Image (cartoon, rainbow, N blue to C red; front, side, top):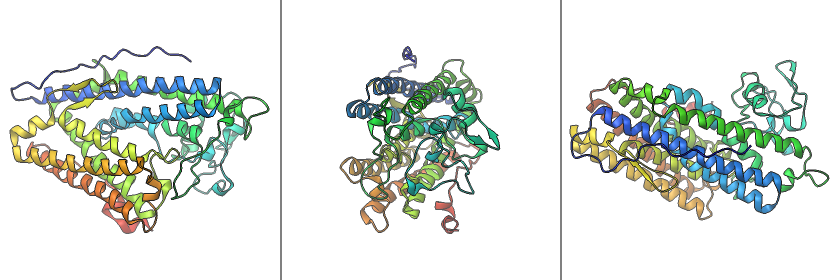
Amino acid sequence: MKRTMLTATALILGAVPAFAATKADVLETYADIAHAGYEDSLITALTLEDAIEALIATPSEETLAAARAAWIAAREPYQQTEVFRFGNPIVDDWEGKVNAWPLDEGLIDYVDASYGGATDENPFAALNVIANPAPTIAGEEVDATTIDATFIADRLNEADGIETNVARGYHAIEFLLWGQDLNDTGPGAGERPYTDFVQGADCSHGNCDRRVDYLRAVTDLLISDLEEMVAAWEDGGAAREDVMDDADEGIVAMLTGMGSLSYGEQAGERMRLGLMLNDPEEEHDCFSDNTHRSHYNDGLGVQNVYLGRYTRVDGTVIEGPALEDLVAESNPALDEEMKTRLDTTMAAMTDLSDAAEGGFSYDQMLATGNERGETLIMAAVDGLIDQTATIERIVADLGLDAISFEGSDSLDNPNAVFQ
């Protein structure tokens, strides 16, 4: 389906005023950045849709590579929006539609024999709905003759209440474009052939018509979901209204998102855990080997919120009164500490990303005994932990109630990881 691209509506602000920022001013900037980030996510998803339609129309090495490149480009702005998740219930309730992971990919399509089959935790781990038009889910035969957005959203996603039955969002599309990454901790991403999308006798692995239907439907669903969140942050939108309703609670939402993403989610579940387990299955973008960019952009999103500045995909900048201004007015030394720690984290993220882009993949960094990989990952983890400690001091300095940030056993109770 061809869609009309939205016109950017986020407010582009000039230089920060010379007078002291109010909390309401800061929240306005925060909401403007959220809106711009989700709108950029939608814009790049529409470009991804075009690339996928080109792949479907003319499957080839070139059109598959272009679709993969469009997916990677679409992840750049989206990952910078994750900082809006934890402090905003509207976003947190929605986020699982677009970015849930890890997923049991055998639910969707064929997998290598080494993947195995059904497990006690997930009897549908190898359901392969693309090859199965009449699957049985929760004891009921389901009509999967037609694969469309409604079927994926209502019947397949989180089938039987199992969280790893992820059937929608960025990672479902990623799996369909790359296939499984069977390289373990060696270099290389998934290697799905373009012939998996060829119709007729030249179709590889069978069911190319249904695979195309699934890819088209899940992309359409992603776009609809992103449209929902763009609307939520527009003037009068539910997420914007919610954060603007109470100034103190709005600032708490900002700091909650920064601290929870930095500590439990990113430093813990997305980085430290995978390193402890030496397990590439703990990668965030495991099929495409794009995890290093997701980590980088998550870190950048936290910095964006604190500084009140976001660079859009077209190069324009959204900026205005920021948390930085509130903290600098209250405690200049604490503001400098926060900015220094954010810079330290982003320098570590840059080193990690540059190493991966240079051929030292995140998979390889996770390998047992890989000292260089551990050093790169732990520098970023340590930076995230340190900046969370400063965020906690900012909460106290601004006179706000203490915040319970998301935790992770990998940081708080490492022995539990191996039990």
